[in-house]
Amino acid sequence: MTPEQTSDGWIKLFDGKSLQGWKAAEHPSTFTVADGAIVVFGERAHLFYDGPLNNHNFKNFEFKLKVMTTPGSNSGIFIHTAYQETDWPSKGYEIQVNNTHTDWRKTGSVYAIQDVKEAPAKDNEWFTQHIIVQGKKITVKVNDKVINEYTEGENGRLSSGTVALQGHDPKSKVYYKDIMIKLLPD
Image (cartoon, rainbow, N blue to C red; front, side, top):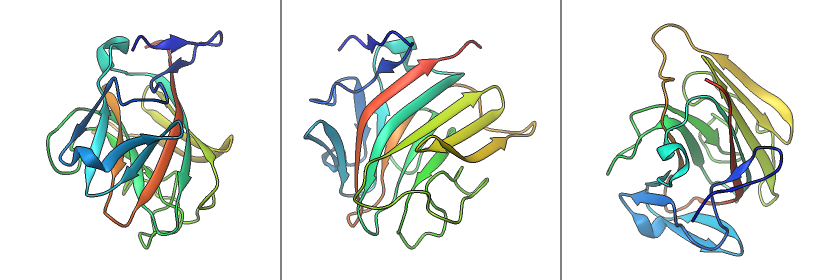
């Protein structure tokens, strides 16, 4: 799949039909495609963008997608990460996707670094999650509202890398669609 760019600089990373350009680790069956969305449902697994755009290595960017959680589900979006076969990704940061799971860290958290305690979205409704990485700063917006702004110190994890979607556990079902990135100057 050749990434398709819109007139305002956004590039689609998901064709709505297949996982072409993405690489699943640990339990690939956790990720399927239905009705134009990536369905995340199954054992812990991560789906890394592995496509041709920028050799799947991004430094400064805006990453935007539509998300729908189901009751009690937990997922996440990793940034500045790298493919790894098992376990939770060790590189980069996780931006939390969780509106009603028992984990108190809710959607928009920079997981276990700067957490959000109140869910900014509802289950069973599509919402937009927008992550902006510029220099040492991460801004997370949900439905165009800034939910979290985090600027890391000297020993941070921001460098560059790909993005990934998280499959959390067999009870979590989350949908992702309209996955886009806009590259920003370094």
